Length: 261
Image (cartoon, rainbow, N blue to C red):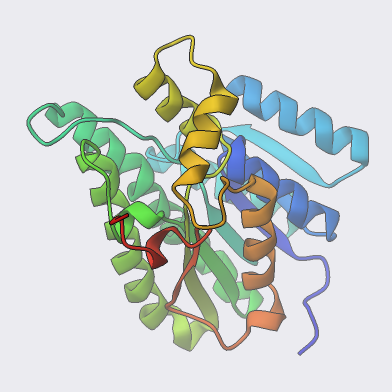
């Protein structure tokens, strides 16, 4: 099956995995609308894309807000003439068990991490159907399979993404829209930096913390966002045309191992 010419992607999140995915897809000729709530992240991504001559637009967007996502999808359609790929990488990562996590923080986590997946599909799938199909890739986490203590809201959101991916895959298969999730282990990103400062304090030595996190993975290191982006690019391509409803782990062997030493 030949790849559709001039594919169009909507990617949420303009730092970490979202940034790497936008650049990876754009370097393959995909026209990308990247949505981020971090103005500095948007600006840095736009500058890199401009320097490389890539077809990337960035838009300040809160993916938990229906009107903002609706506008972003409509703008993508207007600028690029359709939509073929959605990658949901935007996320927040609060810490705390269910007692420590206040209702507002819990609701915000679910609204961004899960609600964003709903909204990009709610507004984006009709545009995909007009193009004859497409691919949606949702970023989950190994924390949706097995979790550490003190991250109740985050793991709830990531487990929900696994279930939602399966539901969307079944619902949209007749429209030739494939839906998959990706579950990374520890990956160099602003969220992992947040974790390092959570455990080691605001002046944490990030590389030392990352080395410690990496030691928990059988491969002995953390992942790089570009490695996850490569997997996403494959899943979004026709090379993965018989894949849907699956969660693919890219975790350095983390969930293959027992914690017992």
